[in-house]
Image 1: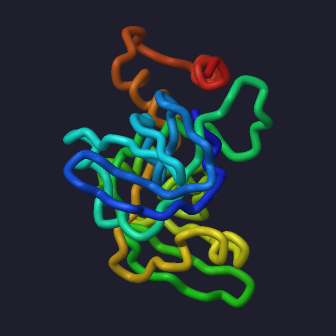
Image 2 (image 1 turned 135 degrees about the vertical axis):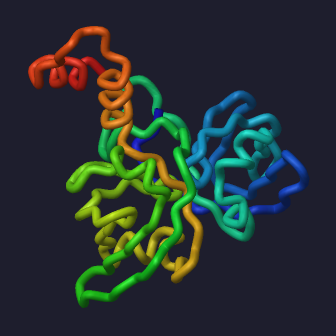
Length: 204
């Protein structure tokens, strides 16, 4: 489990087949789970200046692989007792989104992201979303496009500074929205009250 708060921007040393090698200050251990651009991956190699992970064929099919070069966001998995400051992130990327536009509004940036329409039910206005591992809040949703507001600090300290129209990004939708939707779609009872929905939500 992760929080969506980026620990470090690591440098990609190489990507060969399934093997991704990173240079990072973070001292990883074999078997560690680390979110790289929002995707939970397992450390299989430790080097003097970083670590290596493997990208399964399934991962490579669902991720924006063009972003696994130059620099990547990394966040180690939470440890028991860690302070929770972002939102609940699983590191399970749902889809790849496309940045439609970025507008400078003076004291922030409005970023518009397009996704496949089937993912829109899990993207809730004022709800949480993860973009390339960064925990953010959805401002509003229109059709198959949602809008984010990025403050200057986030724009400067994350890879959002490199994004432009047409950039692809990994998107993890809100876990609770997905769970509730799945339960409602497969419910065995004829009706489910909102009290029951709230009870399901708070149980996670």
